[in-house]
Length: 413
Image (cartoon, rainbow, N blue to C red; front, side):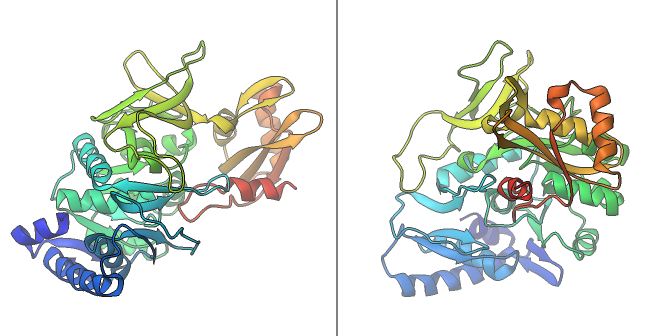
């Protein structure tokens, strides 16, 4: 409906920009309508049924997703195929798999009300509009990439679409994005290869994983305007985001919740930290194949509010481990290692250990030796924050750019 509405009033405005050309709203609406007719012919009145839709960052994939929605079916975008239950999902316009960071995947049905509430809250916080051009290089089989597409359509702007590869700088320079949505790994890599490109973007929205403080400092030095964000598939993406230009005060700082979200810490510890609970129109109604739910969604993320009502995300509940009888938040260890000169990237995990209960392990990407990094960390941190196992290597990532925790754990077997 957003595409059709824009096509009715400004058919010649750009909707999608690719490395090889521009697709207007009028052209896109026509392509979607044509494909939706074919989908109806194929499926008839079998609406609300989940349909796997293979996707890439290209025009046919975007048309396919929206056309299935227009035909009354429920697309399940997929880059790597996986089985989808043959069930109806009442009220949903989209089913999105969770990221599977720790190996488990669940299916999240989202309604039009969920998607619309999220897009509008994002637009109000980021002050975007029809003149904005979103850089979309996140995969559209996860909420990070899909939400960029929906925000752009809702505002009547343009999405600059292309994978995060060697051609992205050419596409971005030619199209001049005003806002980009990236994960921390992408920011880190662009700071190393093309910081001027990042600095040319009005706002760089960064989420999907913890933003290392070293990356924040390098981005600030390069003049990159970062807006840190926190959200999840279950909340249709953004929940809290810093204002454009708002200083990032410390690791995990994500600013105030967006309008329309009720974010609380229902059971805080003495420090005020606890699991983050989210309620609002953008919050889903239950996973596919599980009982429906209402009210606040209690996430697996640990956070705390400051006196000004600003949220800091400390990490996931399973990121807090007990080693030698002491509680250790793995993101704190990552931040300490990442702040050491010469460390390009780091991932810290907990491993089962007969002696310590959990042994902390660090995978480090650096030009320096892990021995030198360990000794520097040991000189500045208490012993329980120094990993007991170390490896040098490249951080394995999921398709959405997040660290593949299961693969990292396997590297220490």
